Length: 136
Length: 83
Image: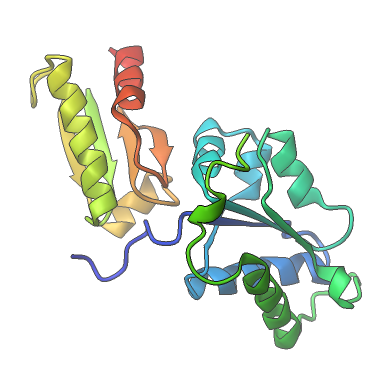
């Protein structure tokens, strides 16, 4: 058996908006952190935006589709929906009191707090309870 | 036709390869002649094929699936489209 498998955690797909502000980049780094912790797997929002059929089908097969948006414009959520995908969980970075500014001085605490909010949203354990019930 | 199954070798990767081999057999394709089924286990080789998540399947260099186990019917459709 291999030591680390890329098949792990592919049932929870995480799409940060990765936008051009501190909040967009906090969303991006939170997705990286969640992937490294094995909570889910960061996936390519740009591929969904391009309507890449393989990526869309992969996302349809996921049990949880998580959008992390940097602000209330909700580009990640809207991009997923535009491709016909159901977003099971969405989060706006600014909702937690983080102010959107146009610099890239990211606070590790802010990144961790967003990652923690996503984990709280996902809840513990098996995600199979929502399987098929929320798919389009 | 070259069918590549990308994955480091976990049970999900093995299930994908099993489905591919099953369909190749069902379609009466001769292994090694009409269809070469190749396991790609090296992470660098997998990444070089544009694969982000495994298991993934490529047919003649085109990615048709990633991050899930494709069912036999799907695999059959992909192969027939490219025959």
